[in-house]
Amino acid sequence: MGEGVLKRPFSRVDGELCCGGVRAADLAERFGTPLYVYDVRRMEERVRAFHVAFRDIDHLIAYSVKANGNLSILRRLSAAGCGADITSRGELFRALRAGIAPGAIVFAGVGKTKAEIAAALEEGIYAFNVESAGELERIDEVASELGLCARFGIRVNPDVFADTPHEYTRTGTATTKFGVPWEETRDLYRWARDRSSLDPVGIDMHIGSQIVDSEPYVRALERVLTLVSELGREGIVLEYLDIGGGFGIPYDVESGMDVDALAAEVVPRVKAAGLKLILEPGRSIVGDAGILLTRVEYVKRSRKKVFVVVDGGMTELIRPSHYGGYHAIEAVSDGHSGEDVEVDVVGPICETGDFLARGRIMRVPEPGELLAVHTVGAYGFAMASNYNGRQRPAEVMVNGSEVTVIRKRETLEDLVRGEE
Ligand SMILES: Cc1ncc(COP(=O)(O)O)c(C=O)c1O
Image 1 (cartoon, rainbow, N blue to C red):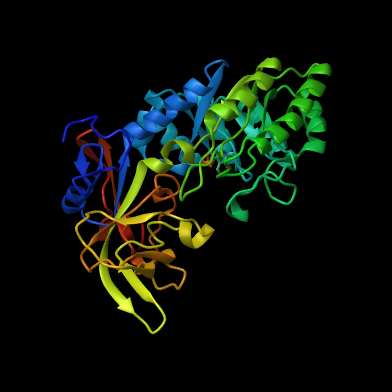
Image 2: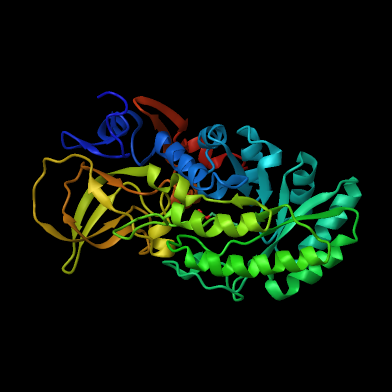
């Protein structure tokens, strides 16, 4: 198969699931299972879609490293024009190691330690997105100790509800731990204005993840822009507005966020305020560019259920168990027949919560058959663990017909590294 034949990632050719110009079954054969497979061209295509949608405004796409922080992916996204949204010292390390310029990095998170703040200051990141008064005081202290000036924006908690598939992915209301209550934001900027180690340069929001409608962004943005103009009247003139990430993608039959429609709402408003726009997409860049290949070990029938036991479970992909996340699952090769029945696709972990799908209607696959779990490029490997003594899987990147192992499967020695 030649490159460029398949427009979308993971299409079928002659009944075989493929990634770019490579058969998924061949990848499983070469690298074993469970295996993460990414189509890097799809990721780059998504970055381009954001650049095009927001071309009328000075913007920074600060890719949210937490979604998938693999160095090779970060390098490619950096080359495609992304900066980074980070949430820890570890993500700062990853982003810098991948060659992302410090000046294109924003740092969010409610629990930044002194050491993390110092490291980010010393590297010269673009700005801290500050989540509390206590954090701002700490940044002031660390910056003055280092003789540096910290650029920051306050992450406003706009108290706006955005519907997401699970309550754990909603971050914009007053009942979540994120951001500074919008009513308290002005006082914090006023306090910071007089401090020589603090430079208020921006304002930030992030209202949740897997949001498919631009309406809650507009509601939150209006609130944030009101603050921007009030601050401007007091002489606190900002440089950037960060609307966060959270743009939804289709997992099942639902549609994802229409990025052009979002831009049509956001760009004129932010432009009118004279601000640079920062976006922090994670899932919408890498989510649908990844599949997890897993092999059926057993088919087990109880009086009430059919269990398809596969070699990947919650340690490889925790979203179904943690958030009730839906992932389409299909056989990698056509050519088997059988009736569709209701099954649970479960992993080998000793937890009843270890499943990839519950009550799924599908043909019962045979032991040894290969399955593909779709839309796992975001929060898949990134949330993988060693629970139950599991070795985290390999990750491969496909670029047309070129295949690169971008993370080796962990070895038994990896499991005990650092232990006495
Ligand atoms: C502050 C912040 N920005 C960006 C993101 C990325 O969200 P998504 O991957 O849904 O785009 C997150 C995710 O939780 C976040 O907490």
